[in-house]
Length: 247
Length: 310
Image 1 (cartoon, chains in turn yellow, cyan):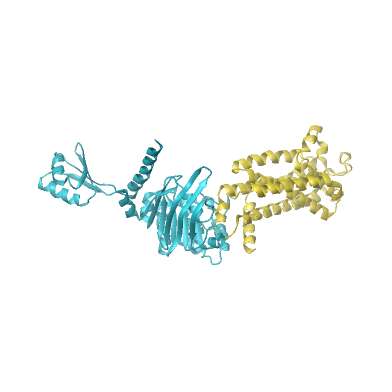
Image 2 (image 1 turned 60 degrees about the vertical axis):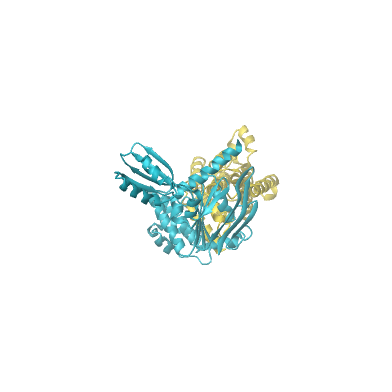
């Protein structure tokens, strides 16, 4: 346990030295919030069923952070560790490379949480952001979303032969999820075609779920979303366990 | 005592037999070098020995442990440098050493190791800013933190400049002086000749020779070459007097080359040339090196294989 803690602390330090990851997980979402918040404000809006645009967008931005850590940072770091034979080197030591994988998951969860907290603090201070839901339901929804996105991330590493391939797959999945799932721009503002495309993206359901809970709905109202996200976790998580190679 | 025992090891990748029925053992406190061209099966053999790879047939024991079933126990006892390993992007020397320190129950103090290897002033440097030679020293330090009895080095010096390579040689010699057993692979003959007590030559998955450096050179049965230059016609003089002891004479203008198995020919030749009042210069003797022996042994393998396919 002491070893695991030490390794996790180290992986955290290494993660904080990755400028691009830190930028997209912590700074970019706040910039989006400030940009769209200053354009539209957070006054009750009839397009948004009477909620403010910031109140509606923030749960989406939180999904965006999960996409950065789960679909970019986690799979690309692991693919790189495998390509550089770092995982293999750990196989020939008293610790198992599984410790590295778990610590990578933990540090990316931590980064997600920090991003979330920063976003909420800025939202409250600048735009009087409001949370209408139940804290525990929101926490549970957040965990479900993270599990599904992180299992897709692990699947990317599992099927990639090298870092370049992992990079390509990550970008192909990440950008559509970012812009077409309602994570950056509310789907209510999107044309009909994009709304149809969005139905094929797992993150759309994460955004729907988290936005709903945020605005005061309950988990019980989102059985379709929960079923899909749970199914994604089981499918991609299971495939990752089956296909993942350490070397 | 044998630290590593390998008997009839076979490892297949689909249709390719990467390691084909090889056997050898490594004595405690010695340096064993596995030589061979790229793709000969050296790394596969290393990975089978340290349990990173399951093998198809044969028996492997290292420190009296089964590398597959006792691997967790084994990894506490051995130090490993794997081929082409690099490290996390933005990790510092100190951090890397700390990770390896917490893995072991009785680790060596890495500060002292850094000092010993002349890297103490690089403690806070990012590993990816080190030179190739420094990075390989780090690889040895990480292998040493476990304070292991046996150290496995897979192509430690590949890609290093000659000066760094020689520095690594001294590091490896030191490991032996400290009483550790070293199992290494290399494709530098000079390195193997300088360091290794025992050498195994691999080619296409087979171990084609295993012996001391001298033993391998003897086995290859290569002539000594004596050469000199002269303006006189010496062919018949030499042929008449030394015919029994020499295998071949080559004369190219003023350059004379004599092929023989016996070093005595040199003395005989000098006496003969003096007696016959022949002026000579640039006399030289070239004994076969490990490289000559290696090229002959590996080359011969290729020839016989060529014949077999006809």
